[in-house]
Image (tube, rainbow, N blue to C red; front, side, top):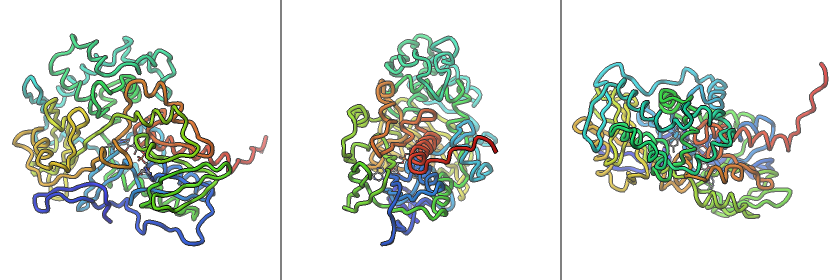
Length: 492
Ligand code: FAD
């Protein structure tokens, strides 16, 4: 099936909107005249919504899943072109991410993972293109350069942030950590600028911007330190957790397992292609009205609508002032992720940074396509933004600029997350002061409405893991209220 989402460009066809994906749900609903009543409505079929839906269905509750798109997965989905998955959003997972790993174990998908990097053949180098010139380095030199620069950036306490961010899944555990949320990445760079070589500065800035996809001014230093702590306080840990292991069959091959398990309980009704317009808490029930005027009612509602688009839905009673303000500020991540299929097989072992002049700044060899071509995945962000489908020649030029002469483009594949009306951005990355003022408010319930999204998880916030953390939390909350568990017997 082909989703409306995503774009593909080839020299033969030019630019086309919509790409095939196994995450498309067809027919788009299983509702019949006899469907309902429902215990719970879940809005959104990303990992938060899929986890909540599955857990509630398995617990015996009747669930209606309402999704605006034609597919599952939200910000994590893969297009499947000629049998090869291009990851349009969330991609990499790791066993150090506890919630996602529990699910990989549940669905016995451990052997479905593969590594993105393959330094066994080909050019096997790192290419740095910066204001102070071009350089080719070994991957060992790349690691040493990035590692040294990052350690200067994060070393706030003489112990690489360990003392201040001692508990990565409760980042405000040490009160002093809060002050770093008043600082931007730019503020911190100013503090250490005299200690950085020009190459260190280039790779450090591009790595920070790879994480936030905002600008240095809008990137919270606190949130960067939180990522650093999650990754075990090392550059190697960052590479392992953030960009190494992906599903051979793509993210949609994982997401579909949640959906299928929920469906197998017989407790799931679903309706796709249904953007929600308003949600009203009526005291003992919650009513949802879709954009095309359909109304659905349940005892509880789990909203997994992301931060940057929460203000496009009308809530009654209105959202509290702190949540509303946080929603209006939003997160800063406007990632541009472009896949390029290129004919040069030797580029499989290539990595590169092209910064600050280029519109795509960080890229790696990510796979070999069925045609035997190299798959390069490229990242840019708000710092030097493009809308890739608006000017495909500019997009191709940005790919070519990463390694001039070596990028013979056969295909481009991408999703424009900035213009996506159900996301308005990529993974959550906080501007200064948003988390310290609003995280608790974002996590709070609103009467019979429970909010769950990776954007306000406490652990791997911004990641698939955080979405599963949140979906689990929402399902537990609702389950405890609607299906109070039998008190355990005092003895057997
Ligand atoms: P979402 O996936 O956003 O789900 C919310 C759902 O709500 C969506 O399906 C949306 O369509 C729906 N919705 C929104 N508004 C409405 C409405 N009005 N009516 C009905 N439905 C609505 N994470 C990783 O762990 N590893 C990575 O490598 C990684 N890379 C990423 C790269 C990119 C380019 C992007 C975009 C994200 C990446 N992430 C990564 C982050 C990860 O994808 C997200 O954190 C996670 O998928 C969020 O899941 P969620 O369910 O919380 O939210």
